[in-house]
Image (cartoon, rainbow, N blue to C red; front, side):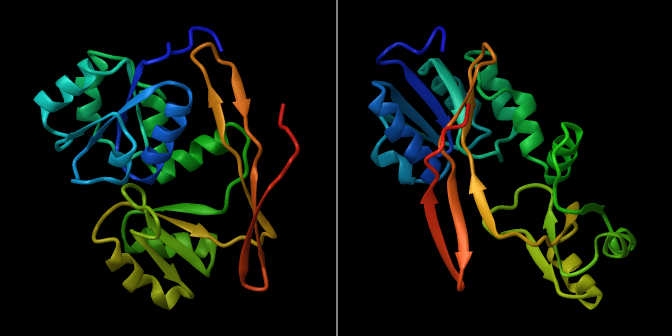
Length: 228
């Protein structure tokens, strides 16, 4: 990697959850500091970060001070208001860029992007009302999961449809939010791969972790093979 951050540089992290905590620990091993910006009090990352700013994402003064105190900014989750990024980006660089964040914030946009670069995803359909949900069920089938397009995570903003009879209650669970219906797929294992790209376009992938479901138990292992 060219032009790495110098030892002692500070990475600003929007969000102070478990991923922010792990990022802070990894940064410390490289001789880097982290500064957390988190609306909630006492976030998990606060215990291991060099500094913490506790303020809402619409606090312009706090965002400005935060941006001026760090060398660059990243985020630990995707639900960051774009208005907050407008304030920060005028002062210090943000990585990954705004396009990457915008894509990951919306499940429909994300799936359409993945398809556009040749990847296969589970069957899905856009849902905005009862009629579009009926059409989605006819296209995707059941069982399926109805998910809000934005702001859902860890099972929040999701409703399971065992059959078309569950459509009304599932749609009510969305509380009027735009949604996407995702079909079920058969799979034998789940592999998580972490990849990083620097500003010069160089990509590094790390050993994937393998989650295998056997006998109702999740078995997690590390695959030793390197990915070029």
